Length: 338
Ligand code: NAD
Ligand code: MG
Image (cartoon, protein in one colour):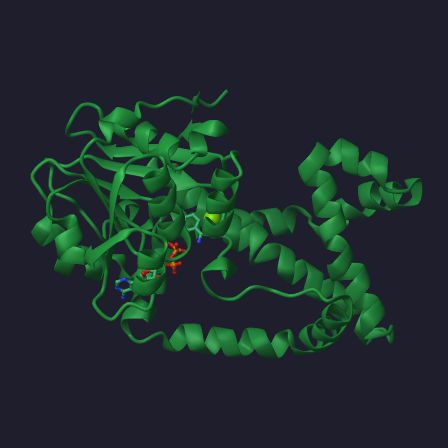
């Protein structure tokens, strides 16, 4: 069984903690630590639209260099693709000797885009939930599960420091699972690509398209292939495969068991292995960051192609969600899978 911690010594965070960025994870991290009694300063760009929100929430706000100076711990919670630039220009030149550096995702460290000097602890505290849930649950007295990892242990107590932070943001109330930067980064990228954001939505759309192309009403196809997915996922989430199979009809269970393996067969699994290899070898990260550096031409094309493919399911989905009063949230709350 994995090593799961629930305790940490908050007194280890007796100095200043700089939280750089006030987006999804940044606002939750800063507010939860602040409410746990830690001295938090939020570091933001001068022109940041988040400054007002952070100040209104009662937090101290400073420029990134000012926040980093004098901090014992610096949490880098800006988007992954800007971290390297923020690190090089604003964080690294102002880092105190011995200050710890914290990430909520291992991408930049694992693929060598950020390499803090030897004298600094490099730790990860990654809540396994979107930032607004991390905040909401903390306020309600509950917590979210989190991951902790140590990349560099300069102080000899990097894990204790990570646990203190994890407890401070409320993850200790559920559990802080020990991992490594490599495991967190690779499994996270693979999971979002093959299953969560890539695989499942593509499966839903293929099912929807198959029905519509065969002449079924798009509204029926939408309810069947997308809307009901939530109900099935809720059952899996609550009680696993056995509970889902207990809850659906025998006809559905027979179809599940006899047809599921025909749809997601060995060829799919073989391609999943290839996707995992692209992640592990760094090929995916290389492509992603090269495209980003070029101003994201590839990303723009992918978005355009994706929107075209999804045009029909999106059109029907919007109509049916409007009927039901179902709405997505925009802004910091929109961020889900990190
Ligand atoms: P985000 O997109 O919500 O963060 C945006 C914030 O970063 C802005 O509010 C601003 O304060 C700052 N920012 C944006 N661009 C900047 C720039 N160019 N220079 C300086 N500051 C800038 O980010 P997020 O989703 O909270 O991700 C932060 C980290 O947390 C990432 O490493 C991410 O992988 C990780 N993570 C996110 C989630 C999630 O649910 N969103 C979950 C787990 C881990
Ligand atoms: Mg993720």
